[in-house]
Amino acid sequence: MIDTHISEQAETILAHRYFVKDTNGEPIENTTELFWRVAKAISEVDHQYEVFASDVSLLEQNFFEMMYKLEFLPNSPTLMNAGTAQGTLSACFVLPLEDSMEQIMKAATDAAMVQKFGGGTGFSLSKIRPKGATIKSTHGVACGPIEVLKTLSRVSSMITQGGKRDGANMAVMSVRHPDILSFIACKQNEGDIHNFNISVGVDNAFMHSVKLGQNYTLNDPKTNMPVSVLNAREVFLKIVQGAWRNGEPGMVFLDRINVDNKVGEEYGDMIATNPCGEQPLLGYESCNLGSINIAKFVYPYAGPGRWESHLDWDRLQHVVRNAVHFLDNVIDANDYSIPEIKHMTRATRKIGLGIMGFADLLIKLRIPYNSEEAREVGEEVIRFINHMASVKSLELGAIRGTFPAWEQSSYKIQENYRNACRLTVAPTGTISMIAGCTSGIEPLFALAWRKQNILEGQTLFYSNENFERDAQENGFYSEDLMLYLASGGSLQERDDVPDWAKDVYVTAQDISPEDHVLMQARFQQYVDSGISKTINFASEATLEDVFEAYMTAWEQGCKGITVYRNGSREKEVLVTGHLEGEITKCDCESPLIVQESGCETCKICGWSACKIS
Image 1: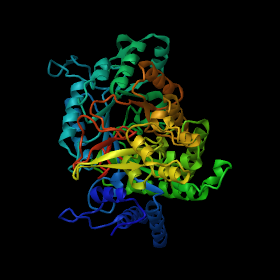
Image 2: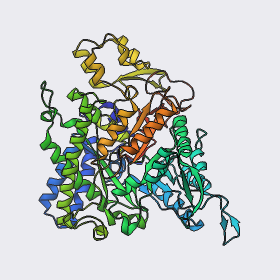
Image 3: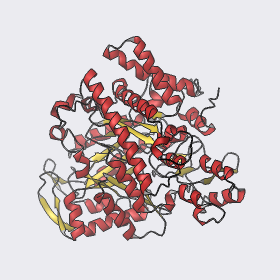
């Protein structure tokens, strides 16, 4: 039975990846039953806290309604595995990586167990001794962190998640590591270490040295003593060149990340993130994510007026509170792959509530994404969500107790939170497709696109539903326009399209890198974890453009930055325009789409290379 409240595409995705199946691989549930399964499994956790059965029943109803209405969806592992006898419910993990053969191989084993059930893993290479360093126990020399990275990559390639694709990973290295130049260049050749994203971890002192053109020190990972110097600007330029060439490495700003590390005195600094960079974590921490489809909270447009009056704040408050309750319950319902992750996750009880559908919200409000008003909308919405999530976490802390590491945290006595962190903006690659909305806080990536149906040898055309409806209702729809857009044309160049539509339906490629960064920075003020956001560049962007984007991200208080210059990867699959060259295909033989988050996603079955949200 097909559920008509979701799209045909969403139904296909759910049937392929999410529905419980029989021994023949045939689905034995539909969308409604999936949401009831998840709602029941997560609400039943409340029985552990001696709650009345009637209250648990009401909670189950609330959980079901916000998922069924597509107002909130948890990350994919929860949708897939809650209420079944298999798998973890969390999406993102960071595993410690220490400088010994035993610890390196343990990290590889732990990563295999995490990725077996769909988790993405992050590592820091910063503690691994540099290549050529003396090993006293064997009188040999160290292979270095790049070889360790390649070993972890090979292990990840062996563990195909759910029989689908390689695991997803992130490797971070401190800019002060003696092998930093080798790390920056390790993915220079496309396809090398293909299942790892890489980012350079930098501190404020390094960034100030970049601005001043000064030298900075490289430090021995074991003693932290200086061993040599490099020119900061020259190293920064190498990072910029790599990002301009193929989008890597990204950059994470470690000092800014650790401002929000409330348990640093007890557990140390956060030095790594999950694969898409939005979740800085301590070693062995995991975080379960969920996202609110913010576009669902807009009243039907009633004409001019303050944008705030068009949002259903009461319903949004209701959903935020229930989403925090839901995500906190997931921590207890979880089936952890190794005991260390269970211990650390329950010690800090971090949750990652975020949003998706932000670009859709702006479209409904008739506000251009690349405007100060749009940034004000984003700031007000995320501030409200931050406040309500914090209030709910305080309430849970009062009823259930604070997170166990709270007494060793830097929170004040009145800040008795249940969760060490509450907010994260994830890329929402697949769940935004299920919800039928734009991903995360990204702008529209395309207004129309073409997709090849490999099985039937057809080329199918798709378009943004809001745009097509507006074009028809306002008299500028035409087959010629849609074909033009699907072939890579820009709306901004059409004389038959009114100016207001050009402003409102601006796409990622039309938005300046500065406006991308400023939007990310505005959200970061109220997000205590990180944000997944891609800074898009036109193909003709210069190295100076990328340099300025990276510098602006640091100056504006972002925790990290990822850029992508259109056309910079040989094997990319374009969302708009003709498909050319070698096309990567999914198991269902459909071409993969490069999303704005940098993830590869199949528009037919919904498989995503991110596999974390």
